[in-house]
Length: 430
Image (cartoon, rainbow, N blue to C red; front, side, top):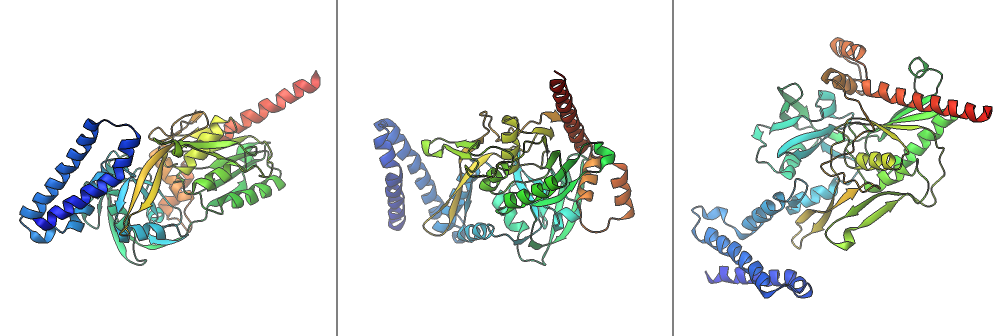
């Protein structure tokens, strides 16, 4: 009992160090201060009782109980705040590298369910046919209904070559499927399929097309190169496909916007409880000037985070027409803080706002032109992006299904260019 009392006293002293200065400088009343201390005494008393009286002594190590309490506290805040044990914290740091072992599916928690945001292209999850919006019910037979997001990520990632079985529910078709996948080293190219679209669908206009799969360090530079190549081929307008783009680096998303906006233009800002959380992000003041060609962004429910920042900024600033479905709605800022024992916190400290003060988090970015795909059209879209040969049935599906969102984007650009041409002819006639 004496040993535990010392632990409780130490916890109280630490609490005093953390909140005491804030209480004094904020002129908090003695009553509110006493309430904070009484709440901590409830916790320490419960911790004391568990360590003293719980039936299984091997489950009451102070470190384990402390980690469990921290995990529960962070999980109760929002799906993106989490406590990481030292091994998880090291794994998180490793994930900042350009490659890692996994299945290539981006997951989040939506309405309390582990949900696929999007499969990354050219990865096991993508090739197997996992779709955005799929709900993961089991991982290697373990049910996920009480699994934290970090625990799910730990199950999905690991040594390349190992197999992972996923049980998935697909709300769009009300199907439950099982996928047996093998982990691989994940490497993803960020700018793909750069081309001038066929004149059979664009008519007399030369419309460029490219896809950004995610936002990495080299993305903006790769995009600049592709834009130069397309403009050298006579591109008059451009479609940038952000569908199923899960995001990535914030600075990369801002730099991508610099390819379409004037220098020193505010792209996004953050706000939180503290004044220090207000930050504004601008395009580079020394960025190379860009041609002001008509632009459409394609988005869907799998467009998240950085993709939403780009779509929200270019829409707000009237630089692009956004076509597709409302985006995922992941627009919060997580600050990573290492704790003294090597564990860490990922804590939501702010939210992203578009230039017109629209909050992205949980709302997403609403397109200017709503255009949705059927379930079969979504499957065909995934198949078109798959490297390698398709089966007979897969090729048949691709041939039969239209990309209604791309068609709507082309129509929008053709309308803009026809209007611009007519306006120019009218001015010349005057």
